[in-house]
Length: 381
Image (tube, rainbow, N blue to C red; front, side, top):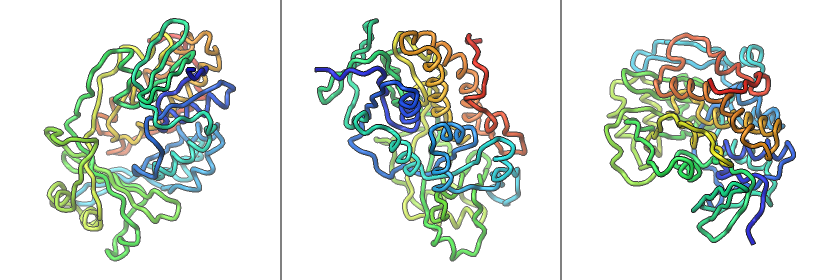
């Protein structure tokens, strides 16, 4: 017999887990289907700005995120060679007062584990790789590689840039390689003490055509993480990422500031990831299927808002479904897109341009956004 559910969420990443938890909180019956066999503390750092912390407040997990993460007082931008300060963006107590919530940097795996803990275990299904999606008008039939079949009133595609739900809406199309790669490394803070340098809580080092973003991922400051953005003409490797090395990093950031050089020297393991992208989608939903996050509007990570947009999407979608219920899903999906498209598209454009906070600017349009306080508009402009 097929599993029968009111709402099926495909993908239990940060956006999918948020959507499922918020809908569960609102009284909907939600089942989540995740292709991974289990979750582990993989990945690396992530920024959670005040705009997202408001959603975590709604979920009752804001204090736990604050307790597990680092709370920088500033986002610094610095010249990668001279060390000159290009901007000092106030966070810390200023963010709490000005934007109504804190700014936290945290390990993605720790944050994800906290989110997943809010889901009912009996409604979270691992090892479910989606094979086929059929919207028959009266409901949606889902088939998984292990033979599992599911029927749902509506399906939320939170399954990333290679979304199978997106494919059901728009056909097969590979994401575009952006021409950029990201190097990632987590460094023990103990290793950095030998250098006698000031390693700031949250700083982006800018070079002519590349950068390195660095920040703490834990409250005790035991982990220091960096991620780069570097032009690379073609992704000529198999797999989601490949090993990199200190030697490659030294070549990539030759002539860098001593702090950057020390970070490279202290790196035990470096990986290199392609940054993929898609053009803005013509539709966010069709029939009983709807998309959020990277399945809908993937972006380069240069603004540290990609996951934030997925979580904001989840909150808005849950808000709209709360207004209409699943029986009037078409109205909910139209309302959701009308209230998310402009913001997500703007963030996507700024993120892809890689200009965010390089110079002194007011980030209030991002950090001050309140998905629950925004007045709902009814039509896409």
